[in-house]
Image (cartoon, rainbow, N blue to C red; front, top):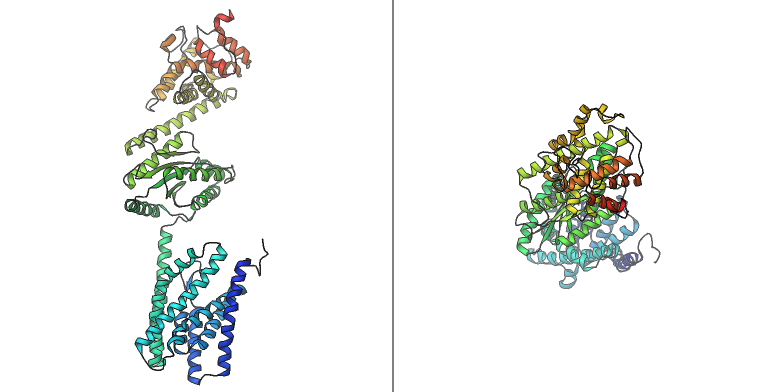
Amino acid sequence: MSKPILGLPVRLALFIAATLVVALPIVGLSLASIAVDPPKATTGLAALVFFVLALVADLRPVPMDDSNKSEVSIASVFIVSAAILLGWRFAVPAAALSIGITFAVIRRPLPHTLFNISMYALSAFAAAVPVFLFGPIHAASAGRLTAYVLVGGALHLAVNVVLVAGAISISQQVPYREVVLPGLRQGGAAFVITVVLTALAANLWVTEPWLLVLLAGPAFTLTLYQRSALNSRLATEAAMTDNLTGLGNHRAYQAALHDRIGEAERTGEPFSLCLLDVDDFKVVNDGYGHAAGDAVLIRLGELLGSADGAESFRFGGDEFAVIFSRDEISAYRQLEEIQRQLVQVDASPGGPVTISAGIATFPSHAQDADELQRRADGALYWSKEHGKNRSCLYSPSVVRIYSRDALERETERNARLRAAKNLVRFVDARDAQTANHSELVSTLAEGIGLQLGLDSETADQLKLAGLLHDLGKIGLPDAVLKEARMLTEEEQAIVRRHPEFGHSLLEGLGLDQVQDWVLHHHEHWDGSGYPGGLAGEEIPLGARIILVADTYVAITTDRPYRSAQSEATALRELRAHAGSQFDPAVVDGLELYLGQEPRHLEALA
């Protein structure tokens, strides 16, 4: 790679140098011409007036954005007027000097200044082409003068755009035509305005030079209009922008979504809507403070905002939306990449954070905005309910779409379920020796179920039932739970009621199967258990599995009345009671899960 020249890439430095090589001789010739053939006083005064007006215009440009990086100057009105009325030898130095002084005042870098001096000089020279071709105007002729201004203004604009586009193309490494064509289109409106003002200025000057002061009114009005339009645009953008992330807000999202649906209906091109939120965001806010939570949202906003071919929005809190200009598979893959990038970043003091997302596509999944949002929201809900840190493509066979009432009921159900899980953790935490009991039973029950060939959905239900099986113990006194002696008959009767109590606590959660397993997880294969005295196949399979998992965990962990026993001891105990207390097939499933070779009761005799 070649070394930079004056801090610029080599190609850009050479482009600026080439512009200088062409422009400097023209500037030199104009100055030499003035020196050899000095103008009359009236002509010199006129040149000075146009120069001063151009300088004032350059020093007070109209900003086109809030960064002041894009500005519009009406200096071209006076430069083109000078070129048409006075000739190129006055217009060229006036243009070069006005922009040179302006850039010196605002302290622009030398290469930038030299390039703009050259570009202004060449544009001014181009504006005088009608005079070269058809001769100077010696008398007032509004039609001819306006025609000169029209041609000269167009050439002035063309040279300006062509040279600036070249510099942008090289510095940003984008194809030239992708810069110059939009530049010419965008310059069209400015060209119309400046041509009108230039024609007005030139005709006023030819009629009576002092009438040029009348141009102050339109020029001042134009400046006020441009600044007002800018302020209005900035205010509109602020009203549509999320202050924290810089993404569009909910108002902008609704407008963009309806616009995109209208466009898709006209063109037939599909697009995808992705709704997402941060997993366990409350944990970040509560554990590390809102500053840490804001940092997470800002980082996620940066990733979503940089997504190719997408518009991103933040509703508030940790809820985001992305409108992808593509089908759901492409959107899914792009979202996967964003999830991968987010996991690699320590976005909070607690480490990486994850997001869950739901994706639906218009028009294949929905026919209007409301329906599309329900589909995407349903897919998001599925992602949250199935482990988080994942994306779900909407499918009617996978995602259930809830009505408003059903969604409220489902939300209430989940809240109650979370409360039940927290109660179980409270039960376990009451005794340090059984702190992880329910979680261990949960994991073991799921593993046994899979070894017995149960489907993944039933295994998930087993995992939940294993976690909740001792929920009813929330009503037992500590004196009973932690007692190291043999319990009295009255105390045993109290303990025996915990499955029924747990069952009642789960009512209304839509977990009928789990409720049934919790109720019967102390039933014995020979009918000697409780609360129903069920036997053999009468006992639900899930309840038989939980009993084996519960017993194994109880034997292999410390209890108030004895210390933990070995795995081998626990398995011997289970085998010894297989066929009486435990289902033999479930004991075999436990052995397989633990990596043991299952041995039937008969083989041990």
